Amino acid sequence: MTIPGTIGHFGVVKMDTDLTMLDLFSGAGGLSLGLSWAGFKSIGAVEFDAAAAQTYDRNFGNHVLRREDGSPLPIEEVDFEEYVGKVDLLTGGPPCQGFSQLGKGLADDPRNLLWRYFMKAVEVIRPRAFLMENVPPILRAAEGEATVSVARQLGYSVSADVLTASTYGVPQRRRRAFVIGRRDGPITLPEPIGGPERTVRWAIEDLPREPDGQNWHIGRNPRPQSLERYRVVPEGGNRFDLQRARPDITPRCWLEKPSGSTDVFGRLWWDRPSLTIRTEFFKPEKGRYLHPSADRPITHREAARLQSFPDDFEFVGSNIQVARQIGNAVPPLLAYNLGKSVVEAMDGMATDQPLLLTLA
Image (cartoon, rainbow, N blue to C red):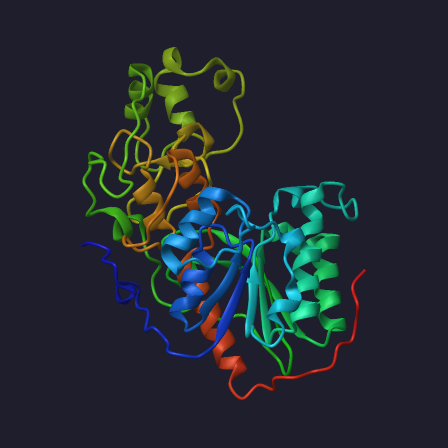
């Protein structure tokens, strides 16, 4: 089974609409890709990471906003007024690293202020709808509460919740928070699609067991001792299997810590979805990233498949840059289901509403 360059493999029926989207904090374009399957056409993207911006442009056309010297335009310099009356859906995922500490009000991390630019864009552009993505803790943080409050003051009906990607056809149990708003009438997040979860086997079994270097199916050159460690861990196992079977080759820091995460140095199961694919999936010591049967970490192509990127999506950058793009992306198939909900809600929607609030 090969995942072809057609979205039909995912059970997607591409919608044909005249709806437009502007993607802020777009990354490589996972969110935009799924939304394009739902019928939205990109008219622009904001992404400050140069490699991710190149990937976005490669797949969607030259849509990333840039300075005169060709460098990506930062969100702080975007003239949102240029997009008034042009955007049906404003979308994006403000960087989330600063949201990890809760219960302290608006944290000092400057990345926590980026949600304000997103909501400022909502205020100025007045899109017919917006969709913001982030890590689950944001919904319990002051930033998340403020986002919902501001959107409602601007006249948007809002729905917010945490969705699990595997319940929308993605072969990965990734949980992400989404805040969705509609300017005229109610809107809801999509219900799970039902049916059995797609598995690691469904996503990657047809790829060569030994990485062939084609289309980001690339391997690493582990040390002999690393290979010994990989061989000890069974399907579904983890570092504790290594500690029990071969304490002589187990890192001392693990031997001195008898408890902890069961996903560290973990091996995936063939017949379950993967756990969250993060940016360092090529390092088994960072999580459950060992191939189900091969003695190696998963490759970039395997990680992209587990994120539901089709094989014809082209990544640009170094190995580390592309891994970051893959791990940071919204799974396109999850984005597609979100996009369908927006399209259905926007049917017959009004196009003009008065401004209700000016953000400081």
